[in-house]
Length: 377
Image: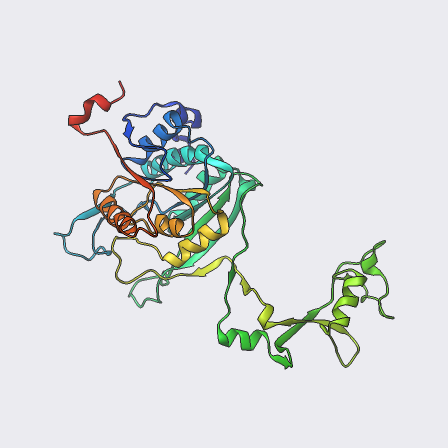
């Protein structure tokens, strides 16, 4: 096990290696779609175009080291005559070396406000987490998000059905962007969460005190003849308690215990937890295409308008699509011709609508034989 990780290249060696081929294009554009090998593309962006610490959010869904060939049509059971989208031919050691080099460059491109969401399966995820701990630091690990990807299966196998994969969430520093995103309640959930009703609507109540005694503060003092229970303190100041009482936002129990009213109409929704149910489409335009609602959540939570975001394994471009619609600038990279065709078609469709054009540049690596003059010697 440790021999696998000891074979990884030194970070400085990865950063110091020159790019192999130039990228031709206009870098003044808001959005970049790059057709080329992502290691070379990121080196070029860092060394020639000053993309160091420019990216606020990176989402990647890299190959999972499955040793499979993925064809257009979305599943491995499609016709062998279907066009190849990409090959995932790796041994464990070569896979970790492949991913480690790219993560080192991604880290260098990320701003101090930046964060990374790395989508991976559970067979490979625990190895990848060790790589991320080494590059980002264990202190910048934020979450291991479980993503429910499909309905329960009934395959005949020795073991439990697999309906999940994982997303590893890391920040570059403590300054990372975080916008609290809430999950909307269904009608049934609203009925359960807010079972009481008065003339203002459906509501529930919560305690006005919290664990922990206050030694010398206002929240440990008496309010309207009441002190907080032993070992607890008021959740807010005494003046705030007065305001809540005057506005009819406190309900008194039979035992004269005050509780704060929370109305359904004022609820932002549920705080999002670390288990997400975002099932993938049954009719993908590209294999391993991910749920767009999930990608939208990630972008909303971990970037701001005008942030630059990146997916250097962009595939069908779902992340780029959602980023553009949310007002972010993007860098998308892929070496699959089929992926680039899908992305270009989508971007061209944007630009046919004069009300909502996408200011983007399509860039190619000059690595073909006829482009030898572009090669760095």
